[in-house]
Image 1 (cartoon, rainbow, N blue to C red):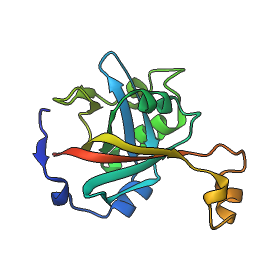
Image 2 (cartoon, rainbow, N blue to C red; image 1 turned 90 degrees about the vertical axis):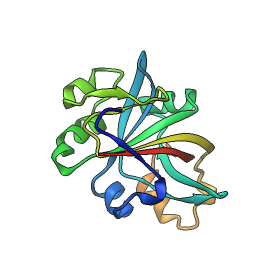
Image 3 (spheres, one colour; image 1 turned 90 degrees about the horizontal axis):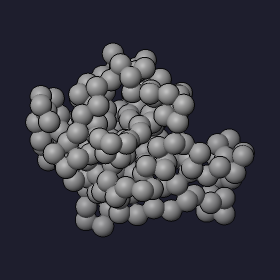
Image 4 (cartoon, rainbow, N blue to C red; image 1 turned 120 degrees about the horizontal axis):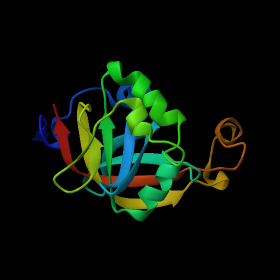
Length: 169
């Protein structure tokens, strides 16, 4: 990946609550022949079963969900504030209906492993899925969360993914 340097996940700097919740990221799955991406503002990073991991949640209605389900790997791409509009486009349009990557003005590139990301990203995590489970109402201890976020019963699927490689500019 031109202009990127590989680093260990433990070398990543910054506040991930801010990076994910405020600055957002793109979840991308698939390969050069066919991939899709979506904006996310829920998720996190940490350690699980002795592995550096990222966790993310995706509603099953999202087109990207199909790609994440079919592929063992995915990328998480983080951007600077100057790409806010591009991430808004990737979060509000469906790849089923348009070429949202083109509309967002992003440049899709492939990692050495064949995963898709974007030349404009400042940080890319290549990940392999380790665990997946659909959220369910019975497991929510705080039932107000169900009322606020899942009124339609469209529960996200949780993925815990091993961080295989990290790339920074």
